[in-house]
Image 1: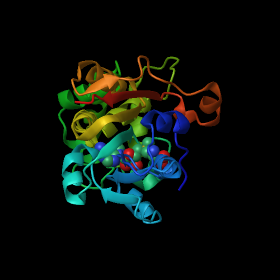
Image 2 (image 1 turned 30 degrees about the vertical axis):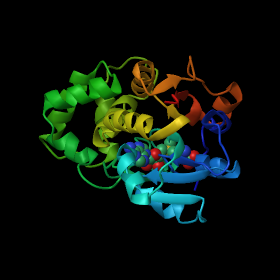
Image 3 (image 1 turned 135 degrees about the vertical axis):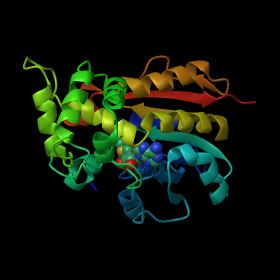
Image 4 (image 1 turned 30 degrees about the horizontal axis):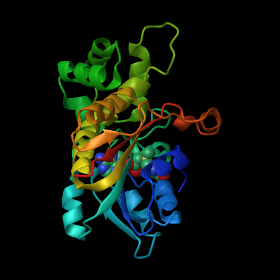
Length: 284
Ligand SMILES: C[S@@+](CC[C@H](N)C(=O)[O-])C[C@H]1O[C@@H](n2cnc3c(N)ncnc32)[C@H](O)[C@@H]1O
């Protein structure tokens, strides 16, 4: 599987691996971070809600590795079912993997034409359902809140007008609509980028899962264990930063977020927006 793990050394250093202890990789993906934990002598309980990641996890074997197809927000329940009780670290590497982005049939990317899907777990409401059924006000709110796009109302109006003629089913149709909705002036990024991000966050309830996931991690970690989170946009980073500042269970390890080296940014463009933060469970 083709995904270059971001800030691999920095994130696993922060987990402070102790041989034989269990670590949760809540976002297994292609398993790059899990592999590094295993190489350093840790044991891994890996989670991912994507069935494709679950298939890939079958190539990992041994008593030091356990995979569960699950949302990381359900970590306490997963721990009950696996019987693993002491967790020395939790890692979350948020967002989508390169595999998800590069497969047109998953519908995550405006660069490929495919069905407007975007569901990591392949169940429930997809992006086409949202785009074709949400009210204009709901769409504008999603695009503004999760995409931080100031043209949200204009975009929502364009979508609603277009779907009254024909339902919007493909990433290409939506991309073309977004291009037409944007004012014709110089832009810093593609007009579809923020709306695609917003729809993906809404379809997968990414921010809700993050809030639940970090809060349960704070509860299940054993004393001295660490929560390490790699985020890719300001909405996620803000949630982790606030959580750490307010938590009674965890103390801040990273006063400022750690960012990728210039070398990593140039060799792996996906790393460019990454921010790494960590907290340590207070020993009771
Ligand atoms: C950036 S990739 C992780 C890549 C991984 N660290 C590696 O080295 O290959 C994010 C992964 O997290 C998964 N994911 C995102 N949100 C999730 C959630 N709430 N619960 C479980 N998995 C999630 C996605 O399906 C995706 O496979």
